[in-house]
Length: 507
Image (cartoon, rainbow, N blue to C red; front, top):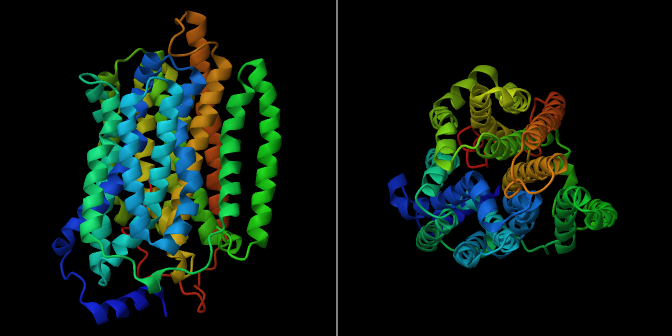
């Protein structure tokens, strides 16, 4: 008996679920607010980085970690909190995460240094890790009818995509009339709305739906330490001589944590990640495509901000206008996802859309220094590709999993995207720090220094594009190895996995 069947029978004994979408509007408003926060928080801050850097006197590396700290905490802890939520209750963990989000956002008012802001971003990432894994599961719990589930997920995902699309534009216009702190304080009312909606509209977790096996805390923490080490070590190595000496120690520690993490996954009775699931062709291919997309999207967003505001001197409001084409493509492209998948198939749609995202990043790296028209081309290609790959990559992962592992699959999809995005920002920031002496926010610009900065953007863009392309190649190879006939012992959840249902995965 599948978990959804068990849940449906338990509900039948207690009472019917809402017969219409509008009957669950309170819960839908709360869950939509969660997705809005996750997407908006990722996109809105990048446009403010130059302003933040100037006001706080940030170094190049410090400015990089204002953006990257959120992704490291979010991606590194998501699987841990997903496992915790399965055991103590998804609703309970999500409500606690929303309280933390509000507190962290309010703490922005007291920030006076770059280090303090990075700490706030870490707390915000922890809050995101607590709210994300259970959000899709809570949405599914609202209804027993599959059509209502699909429509509910469409409503929720639309809120997230709006946040992702309009974040940079809204942020640019806000900075023209208000301090940058307002952008982060906006999370407070969103957290309150989400808390009220989920608290009042979503029922408590049933004891029978919770897992009783212990959480592999050691495995989760060693994995988080490995990820943090991989992202932090490059920035330490390119720092001053005293910092560089610590970089070699960081390398040794990171390798040790990585070896320990893999060993733990192989020996733990209840590992935080089941390696056998990751080895499934559809799962590994979908995660590879999602990682390629996450890396390219985060890398392009970070680099475009540096190009427009630092290299070209555009004010935030004008930079916001410059990103409008991406907003249009993201919002208008939703209607094309279904037809594209139906026409070319799930697997082909995945690699074509991922390739479009990678191509956009490559165009930026190679040609952006020659004028805005190439930035425009890059933004459109990435937006068009991510609108599709965000759906089909998640669908591939969940199609390749047993029906009782779809929650783990959703967490894996989001984790791969966040970790790849965090790595992209870390690599791009490290390259800029290596090419440009002094802080990009406070040191005066000279012609040679500006030329070095443009070279750094080119190297970062093309380097990240090559890495993302390698993920696409891996995804194609693994997809071709997939068995076209689902196993009869572990049926694929074909009745619940459609392109529309997977949109809540982070684009």
